[in-house]
Image (cartoon, rainbow, N blue to C red; front, side):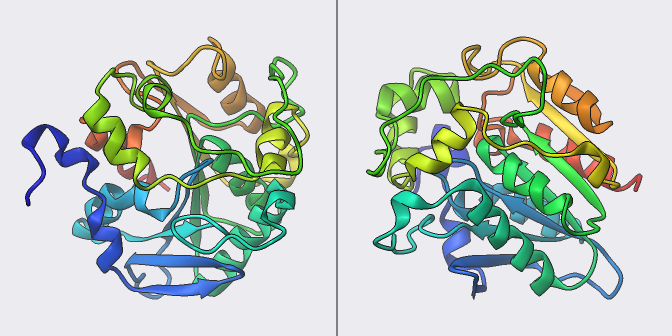
Length: 272
């Protein structure tokens, strides 16, 4: 049965039809393979999310001839969660991103959303990437103005947010039908990953990232996790370009106006 028109932006089924390959306990989903020498946009999801959240981006960039892929990190996007999943940390996720870059082989623009920004940055500090894109990024520990958040209990996986929280945090809209479409795809998260972000345990040395970057702030983000000025400060720390998208929610890659963020990335990438 087709999705109601109002929920087209929450139809992620394209990802289920794309070529995928295992990569370092994760999975690499390919939208378009790069021509020799051309860069691939590698999209890294944030907490509770999988490659599915970039379904629209994969279609958008492929239609414009830009190579693109998205990553299911270990235990995410429907992948089985190992017995030690609750010990998985952001450093482990970064190792998966590095492995994906190595598998792609050519130039890579690594893009990370929310908590996915941290493994993307760690990858960029390890590999000579062509560019970095941060979408509503979690701050690294060495951002002077970063605000720590209360820790979650260690040792057991963290359930995804409920419908009301999905609406508020991810969609910035009290739409339970929309939240339900997202909830069907979310997975539990490792408490170590969450606490790495919440307790500011992941520093990233700006001197180790030589690539240009773009940081997109969601103007309708939640102020507890993204207080005013934080995303701009992240961009300044790494010397990245900064752009505020005033009407975008935290999960700008599947908002009703997701094309705005996709076009901002494309315009920036075309100038590299």
